[in-house]
Length: 385
Image (cartoon, rainbow, N blue to C red):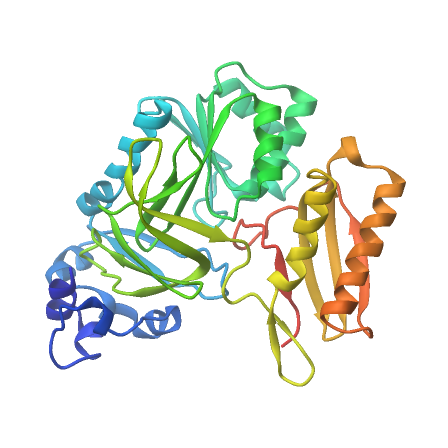
């Protein structure tokens, strides 16, 4: 893949004079570089297919604030998913022939949903246009055996399931697209009475890691080569020859454990993902930056102390000295005394970690809906420029 990229892709040819086969000597690629490079990211060997519209087209969701187009050869795209499908079947007996349901970006197509014998695809715009209860009834009527959901959307469906019930055919839910918190997983498993698994990937390279029944996120070593420096993650695609990604810096944070012998029978690399993206930073008045995990730790500690009382949350930095916390409590734990204790502990932590002058607002919500633009539930947002 390195040879192919540096021989046929103008973007990579402009980075170094001679091809280096020691991957650690190759430059790290940032998303901003990719966006600015445009069509020079395409391999010359695939230009004919690009010009004749034979490549698969998609684009990033923009959760990092940066969007760009991604191209795949259709054969390579299917090949990149083979290892994931093999593990889905090995671990959970899930196959492409079984009826499934998922949500697609709101800016792709005008239909609320697209239905076939084995797939029900629903537009994320249904989360915002007041039609969600009807769509849920459509899902229930379709009776999928499994679903691929972002954790934020799964919690919305949990609320609807309590109103309209579930269907007996559902037996597996796969999470993707956001950091999965155990409180969310438990809520989904209790509501839908099914098994769940976590899957980590990006549109640039497709699947990166998949969770086995033992709880380990196994790296898809047939599809990607994953590197770790500090908490930063870098991925190299082993499948996307039309638009290669070599040492591409991911926004997510984590740690790779090499050569893990897992009880599931698989031996290889495992990744532990951390909540909060690499670029989620709190901005202070004098130019200092602090990672948002500083404030996320308060939520983690409260959940440990009160046995998973917080199902969902979002922290918004409104100004240098003003923070708003939006919190969804498990309704079984939702007492006035608990609310007061949460307010006191969050405000104490904010003042202790960021500054005594900070204003702390806490708003309790029934649901936190994904952003309309990205379809994701970011846990930290900054309005400070």
